[in-house]
Image (tube, rainbow over all chains, first blue to last red; front, top):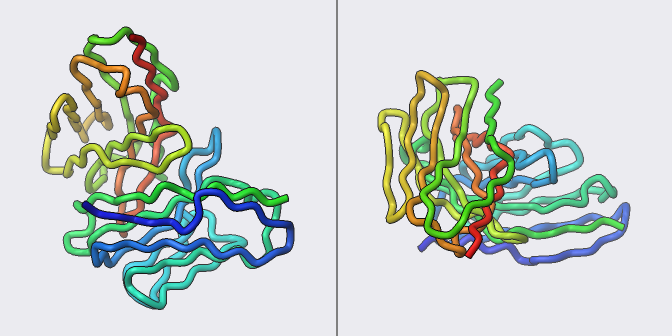
Length: 115
Length: 111
């Protein structure tokens, strides 16, 4: 079974802090994704990566950056956390081969609160 | 821009009933459609993926269908159980494997 592990289930940070959310997958997947999920807005794509050191903006990249130094690890960075970034963050991964027909596998999520 | 809609937002049925969850999308140029389950406070579990060339996929008591021409997908759950209670999300894949999600249907199965 595919395992996508997010380093923290719950995280509380203060406004202005630099925040790192970590995601690791164990299935040698090329693609990795970061989403946020908010009531009434659903899941929205922040960034994705299809290879080491490659990244693409999703629908809501403002205020975020990402890092992919190793294939199995994809980090989401909040450069200067703000209260409107309080949310549930979900990481996902998938195989690249015939990408569009590969399911995405999700981690358990990190519930981030910015005070 | 693709829009994915799931109606109703919430559904409550007695245990043992068969039920259908609906998903509609505005752009029929999708590559596939994926159904997920989400338990409260948890991540998403992939249930079924239907490729654009397929009409349906089955896994146990679950059957998902896809009609691209009408922009609809359905998830059929047979003989529902209390353990099926969760939020069910559908998502279409456009280019570059970008998923576009519906808002979900919160399903409650009453014992």
